[in-house]
Length: 265
Image 1 (cartoon, rainbow, N blue to C red):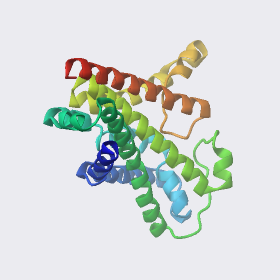
Image 2 (cartoon, rainbow, N blue to C red):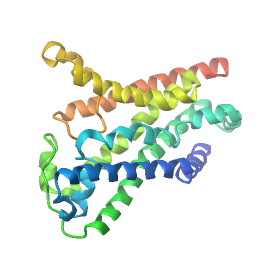
Image 3 (tube, rainbow, N blue to C red):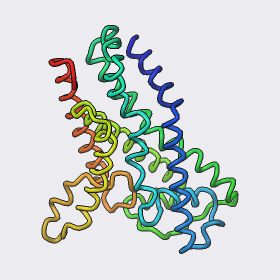
Image 4 (tube, rainbow, N blue to C red):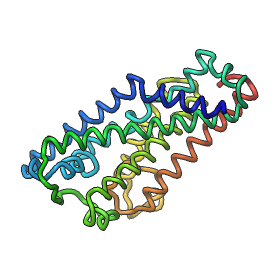
């Protein structure tokens, strides 16, 4: 009962926050910039239909412009909620109403849902805007590499958008848990926001500079690029989500145990 009421309250708190909608706006702005860059190389895009415009502003954008902001966009809205509870003393009030484990589990669930939903909200708005901008029937414009999900893309643009939205939601959930774990261990706001973004971009950079013919095994174990569908391995995409999830949950469990023993982060 208390877990449910806390979860509902967290949903309202997250979805109605200014930070949530500012991150949604930031994603829309970055998508518009990405689309403008794509249109310079492929001027037929404005007439390709709303769904195609949306995809080439986000999932199939050139140069990873849209992807660059993804970690921050999902972390900022609600991943600081645990630190806020610690600093305001709300955690003590919540633990008097429910078991500590219930509080920590509910906090992880609410943070994951709110963070993942940032992308879903932004995508819904972007699809509507793209449909108004280009109401013509959508046709495919192949300008980006797409290997693993090519069959879905060729079969249905809506199905491909669904897969992309699901992957983005999972990305938001896993990176929110990573940020939550960092906050529970460090108690530092700047590390909570900045370190997951650094990890995301650093792993992509390392995977790019490593000579794969020499240390390919190291590259395959890196949890890099889990936000992008422009990949040649669905297993690597799933692996990246799993690694980030378990790292975040391990840190969070450690911080939870330390709080229960010492009463602080």
